[in-house]
Image (cartoon, rainbow, N blue to C red; front, top):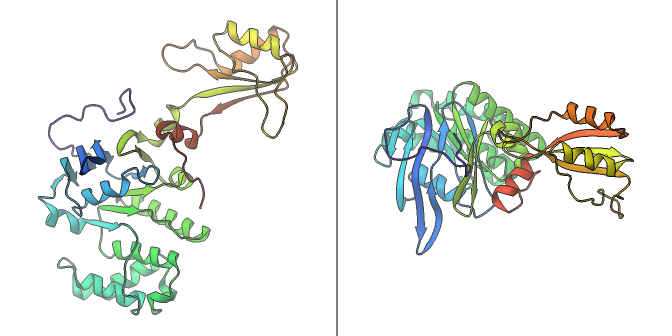
Amino acid sequence: MLDGRGSVAGTGAGPVNAGLAIETRGLSKHFGRQAAVDRVDLAVPHGTVFGFLGPNGSGKTTTIRMLLGLAAASEGTVNLLGQEMPGKLHDVLPRVGALVEGPAFYPFLSGAANLHRLDAASPHTIPGTRRRRVQQALERVGLEHAAGKRVHAYSLGMKQRLGIANALLSPRDLLVLDEPTNGLDPQGTREVRNLVRSLAHEGTTVFVSSHLLAEVDQMCTHAAVMSAGKLVAQGPLAELRQAGSTRLRLVTPDAGAARQVLARLGIVPEPAQAEPGQGEPAQPGGGTVLAALPIGAQSPAVLPEDVVAHLVKAGVRVRGFAVERESLEDRFVALTGEGFDVAQ
């Protein structure tokens, strides 16, 4: 649940929440006097595709490294799959697949040979099923045709997919992916997106760190937003969108009269401004009128269709009318004060 600041409410000391795949409380990481991660309270429900968003340098990768026991936290607690980290590290990590800060492989071995070596290095895998599991992992990421090719000849996108294949060599309850579509072409990006969805459908929780809003919008069910080391919002993606503003766009030659009608309805029009691609601002007597639509318990119950009815009754000629909800990009920029990349 989101509190008034857009962060999780009720994150004080208490028992581990069994419904969460990842739970942190007061998680912090300091480098000298600099707080790279500052009192982060994450709550990632089981079975979700959870987008972990933020501009570069916002603390995403540092947080992931602490989740996986790759870096020690300065303060706070981490629980993965209901187990305290790093105390239960050896019990938890066999159930977790991860791709963090890009894949690293032996460049003069083939993709299949790399996966065989990595699987053999784990004390938790079964040697008798290794060949079958490697083949299945390569097929899942679309690399079966390049299984025998040396990795130094792989493209960046192919290496990224090989890293995901390595994370899938054994059944996982939690998959942590740091920028999984980095370097992928549109087809590869679509394949990874479909793969993540299929894994979630099978019951795996997928935690995806990304700065690509378009991918998160299409892939994730929940999200959290980081800014300058702090968690500024988290929850279901639909709730994050609804927390943004909604506005009316009215096209009319009777802008002056329209503004008066809107004001009587408790809707304050925005100052006249230039339309996109045009050099002249809207004139007081005509053009486009924009106004924020009041929402929430304290706002008047004004439905868009009621607004149109009041305008027509007052003699305002309506040439166009639309309700525009704040986009995901607008919402995240408002939360962080910085832009995001919205496409590959």
